[in-house]
Image (cartoon, rainbow, N blue to C red; front, top):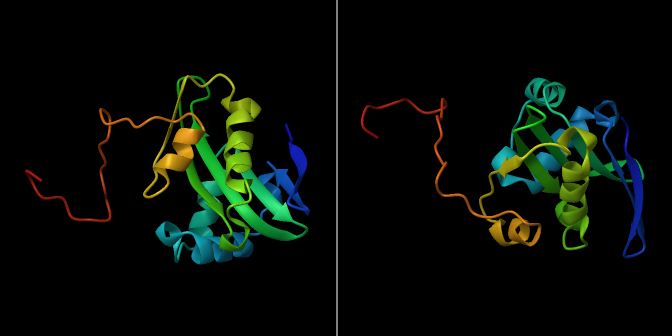
Length: 152
């Protein structure tokens, strides 16, 4: 299934696409380094693995320039998680983030999923406007980048 949506936002023609093959990993790396403090210095090889294991992968384009990105992982029926939602800082506050998340949620592979999770550091109010609610009952993490100490 392929989604190609053209949108005119404040006079700019922006294209939303779900073809992961269209994503140039160097452009994605540059977008993350520029506009996502939580994803700075991700390696090309690791980005490729993440893309290969995600469905859907949605991107936003201004002509040939990658300006937005989001991806999800899911079992297709019970649970999904949306990851790496980012809009180029030069294009923020134009409604593109909303459209990017809505396109991700509306993708056929997400249609039957009953519960969709995401993690955000500073954008809770943005996601609340899209229907997400805070979930304090299931927040746990195993952070393998830090040594495990008993009792913490």
